[in-house]
Amino acid sequence: MNNTSLTTPGLLTDKVAFITGAGRGIGAAAARLFAREGARVLLASRTEAQLKAVTEEIRAAGGTADHIRCDVADAVSVRAAVDRAVELYGRLDVAFNNAAVAQSAPGPMDEMSEAEFDRLYAVNLKGPWLAMNAEIAAIRATAGSGAIVNTSSVGSLGANPALPAYGAGKRALNSLTASAAATYGPEGIRVNAIAPGTTLTEMIQEWEAKSPGIVGLLNAQTPLRRAAAPEEVAEAAAWLLSDRASYVTGTVLRVDGGMRA
Image (cartoon, rainbow, N blue to C red):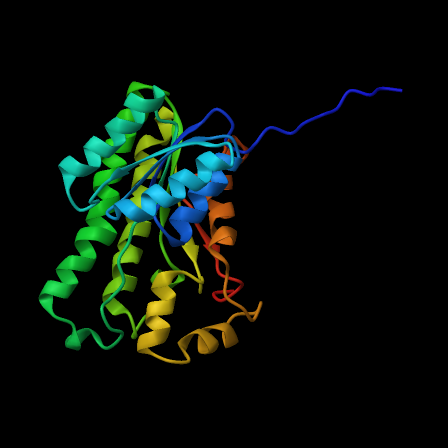
């Protein structure tokens, strides 16, 4: 009898991962998951207290994690955060650009202020652009090859009258993702996006508070008839960043319970 035990390595074993928007929601779930799957993670967001709590939770579970405050709309802040990952862990292999802000209030596009529009695009489109530029430079200089995942939304895949600027910004991010995949694929850097459907994060809870019943309405439009837990969305990001998705690049993966089927 062969008593040799076979262990399957984690999806991200020996990877160094950088995560934005890591203080709560999908980003925090991803930080926990990536660490469980073997990655050394650097968590980034604007909120120190949230980052510290998630980092300490990961460490208590035996994972390797640290955190840094970062404003993804600021190029200097983003570059410093990515450089910190390399300083801590020696290289950068993968990155999950998850930071985003929601519209202050759902409604028609003509009711949105110019300042609100600019705020959304500074974080939701310029932010990932800045992050990818810094991450690609770090991957090139250290690991040599790697993978990036951006968080888009099913709201980017069609008309979005309730959240028009949010949806348009995420659709632009889909295009930026495809362009990056085409540009950096020859170097061995894969770039994909995930498009979550209704997910039980603070962002969707805030929308529910402003538009009571919206979660139930969205669930009724979803074949699985429920919202996702943040952990379910994080699983898709982990797979896309792993070597098991080695031939996948330039895609927007729907994680939406069938909403856009």
